[in-house]
Structure formats: C-alpha cells, structure tokens
Image 1 (cartoon, rainbow, N blue to C red):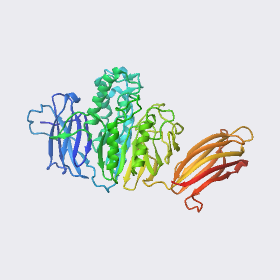
Image 2: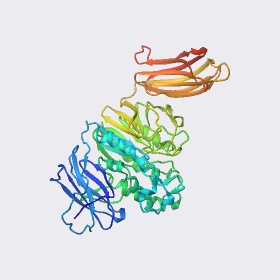
Image 3: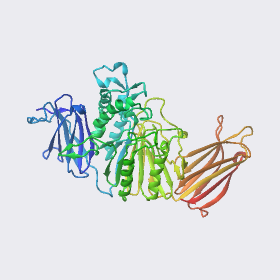
Image 4: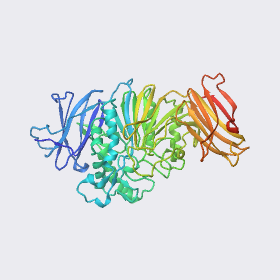
Length: 572
C-alpha cells in the first residue's frame, strides 16, 4: 500500500529522551498516519507507528515514540494511508515519501544549547476569495513571510545547528485588521493553520528541529480577553482553542502519554522541558487572565512557576512569556505592566530566593531588543524577538514608547538597562546559552546580522545614578537648549535622555545605569537645522581610583555652554 505525503506537517514537537511527538495531517477520512523512525538512514532498525487521523482534530494525528537516546540523530518518514485504524494494513510502500532527520535534545546539564526565538508572523486573508477552493490562494504575504524561515534554515539549521525553535505567540493572526475580518468559526481558524504551517520553508524547518509553541492574543483576537463578550467566550474562544490544541498543543510536552498515545485533554496550557544547561518554563499569560482582579496568570500557574524556579538549582532558567515581563509600554495595557502586583511578585520572589540565571523570552511587540533588570542582588535578562514578518505600516513601536533605562515603574528599587539595539524590522533571534552566560544575535529576514550582545549571569558590579543636570549658561543664544544625554554602557548602543533647558533650570533626572567596565556620557544640544552641538563628555571606568563616588559633579563647557551633572557611583 502506498504511503501518501502529509498535507500539513510533519511538525516535530517534543524531542527528548523521554518522548518524540510528531504532528501530521491527512487529506481524507477514514485514514491512518504511518511513521517510521530509525537511527540508521536505511531504516533497517526502524520502529513503526500507526496513528488514527482524528476527524475531531482536523484529520491530524500525533506519532509518539518513547525512550530515545539524548543528543542522537534519528531518521524518519511520516505519511498516511486510506484505511481504518482497526484494519491491518498491507505491506507499505514508502518510496514516494521524503526522509527527514531530527536530533533529540540534551540532558547534560553542563552542555550549552542554541535555539531560535521569534513570534508574530502575519498572513492577511482575502475575504472576497473566501470561497476559493485553494486555501493557500486565500491569503496575502505567504511567500514574503516564509523568507524568514528560509534564512533560519540556511544559516542556523543546515550549518551552525541550533537544537530547537521557540515560537512564542501569534503563530497565526485570526483577526485580520483586528475586528473587521476576524475568524468566527472552527473551519476559519483551521484554514489559517493549514496555510501558515504549509509554506515550504517553515514546513522544512519544523520537520527538522523540535518546535515549541505558546499562544498569544492573535490566535484568538487582539488583546484577548480585554474586549471579550459572553458570546465570544462561548463561541470564538472555544473554536480558537480547539484549533490551537490541534496545531500547537498536541505535539508539545504538555499532555500525558499512555501506550504511545496522548491521553486527556488540556486543563492548562503551560508546560516545562529541558535542553542541556537550560530548563524551560513555557508560560500561558493569555488564557488565564482576569482583568477585574488584575491577574495575568492563575494562582495555580504562579505556584507551579515558583516551585520550578526553586527546583532548577544551577541550571539556566528560561521563561517563555509571550508578552515581556519588562520593559513595558508607558501607555500600554496588555503586558505584565498592567498586572503590576503579579509582575512585582515574580521579580521579588526571584530576588528574595536568590535565584540566579533567569532569562525571560518574549515576543508580541513587533520590536526586538534585550534589557536587563537589576536590584536587591538579583538580575533578570529579558530577550524580546518580534516580528518574524509584519508588513503593515502600523503596529510597531519606538524606543520612546518604553522605559528602556532607569528605575522600573512601580518598583523603583530595580534598575533597567538596555544594552542592545532597538530593532523594528522583520527579524529572528538566535540565543546561545552556556552555564556562565549567553550570546544574543538578531538577524533580519535575509539572514543578515543586525545586532549581537554577550551577557554574563553575574551581577553588574557598579551602578551610576544620575541625580540632576543644571544649566548655568545656555548654548543657544535664543530660546531653550534641546538637551540630550547619550549614555553608553560598556560600549553598547546608547540610551537617550531628553529635556528642554534654559539658564538657571535644573533637570531632576534620577535614573540609574548598571555597568561592568565603562560608562560614557555625552551631552548634546539638538539642532533641527544644523548638526547637533557637542557640549562635553564624561567617561568613567572601573580602573578609576575614585570608585565608588558619592554625589560628585562634572562640568560640560564646550560651545560656550556651562552645565553641571550631579551623579553618584555605588557598588551594585
């Protein structure tokens, strides 16, 4: 009997020494999925699984293999046959199927791990062509959006191999142009997954390395559940989550396995797994929200998360949160900053229990950058990677929209610094983690390196506190000086502070910056007509004998101006 190619998949989900789970979809009912897995490329040692392609789950099936070897390459083929699961199939013909390979994750706690992080891949449905029989032709931006995954394959899978990819939200956009053309029935949600996951490069990528997913709002609707009605909760939400379970949950580590089959249906969507020196907690910060009581995750998830943090000992603790823990939008209401009590509870728990090596991995905001939160002898690294592809002229932010440096809003004992560039283009992020630190590399859609930062898990030793800037004499003869302080922390990309000032004015800055070796402060008077006027510079290095310094002053006197900066340097 001829084994036919899948119409969606294969998608490799969990691939550990405990379980391998691979998703596939057939074309007709009844049908049976057939997968064979082997260490030898000629399949002479193959195991075979027969999987019912379940009509209740859009003709998908999860092939499951148990007790594999860690860090081992396996070869596999996965297709389907037209028969009933209760019938014994004839001898199988595999020759028209592509042979894939995958590598299981590591269990060695000293081994580094490398993975891709990304989110937000937009496809726009052509509503006038909804009755078109070819599902793929119903959408714009398929090929352009797929180019990001081509760059990942060519630069990070075929060579410099990563061990996994994390897609941390908005794998589909079920709400075209927000509310105007949103999905409302199960077929509509499922079609979006068919098209999104069947483009050639994302399909090749997900068939080659373990793919871990969690939803954000657009799998349901923008900012869910902020505007949800009772009808939405009993209609749209149920359809959205059924499609989500089918295409993002069932091949994840979430659901228990018995006799090589998934058992139970999910009563939660957060889960954990491990890869080398890193443990991963994949949070659900979307479906457990309670807007009235300002809760972003349930008490049950919070308890499980805290227990996981304490039990992960010396491992790197990677927390996948579809929305960033910090920095938050200054005027936003869809991130952890809206749920200040729980956000601060997480931050304080990490500090109080002296939990080290904590990294949050997020998407959502259509910008990519890395920030660091330090205070109370703790350090949290936040990496944000978004979007894989976003073609619209709206919906991306600017640096001034966020608190990228200085005291954390509503929790001033912690200080935020942002050592990376602020990237607004289509992109993805590669993260290389070892037990002592990590390297974060951001690439554009063509695979060109945009930014790279190496960070340590150790606390930054020094903190600069900028108290105030006083204008004794303007640089401009007429009008106010448009003052801009450029702060370079350890030669990273500058962070900016702006203020209009006149003679006699004092600018109360009250911002803090943590640094390892060097901090450089430059003062400019911005000029819209000519080049900005450079008013002076202060450079501080850890080799200075005067460190730390308590409430000292520095003068900026170039271009005829006279400003004094009052600052303190303390041990962090």
